[in-house]
Length: 65
Ligand SMILES: [Zn+2]
Image 1: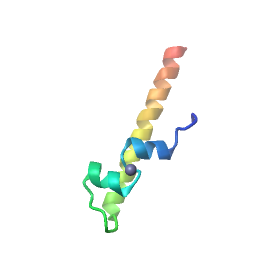
Image 2: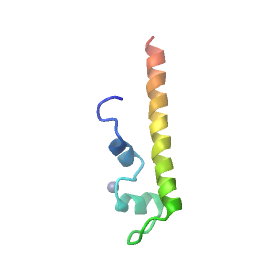
Image 3: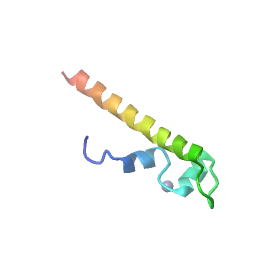
Image 4: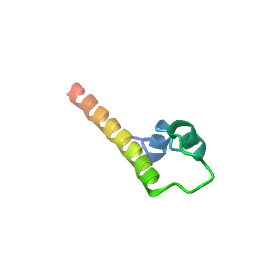
């Protein structure tokens, strides 16, 4: 994968980098443990974003050749 293309980047892009962003963008209250469902949801958001990036990357490769 390209440089700087990490889960960390994905977390910022999907606003799952910290509890502040999670609260603001995903409407999950801080101060208590995330439930299993909420954790699954956040992982899903990140994975979907990563897949989109991969698709975009592949598309760009196809255009170049
Ligand atoms: Zn944040």
